[in-house]
Length: 134
Image (cartoon, rainbow, N blue to C red; front, side, top):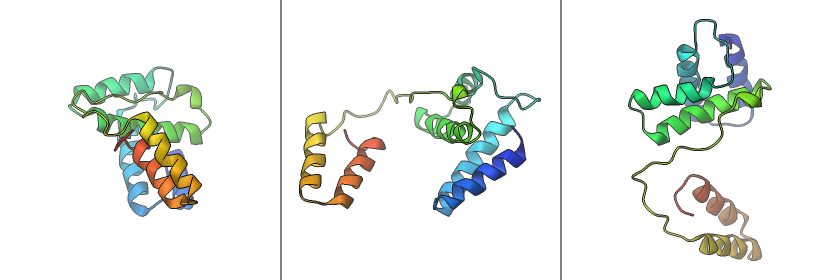
């Protein structure tokens, strides 16, 4: 990994109509990833696993660690090395139970689609993907 590669990724990411805040967020996360890499700055199998463990030991919450890993996984996808990505999200032990069941969630999606409410449909999916419900 080089700083130039990271800058190219961020420039490309910004061209994908990402907000300035999102690009800055990814910049901070990737800078930390870069700084935490071994001296040779080479990413290998297990690099993200070790980094995840290091972030947890540093006191980051599972949600924060997931955000760091999301940025690193996006970068690895960009450079064509998906084989080094770390799949799965850490679960927060204190997270509350979902307010909606899966059946209720799917019912909301079907209803929004049937009423041709694309924005509502996408918002329901967004809320579910971010863990707000479902």
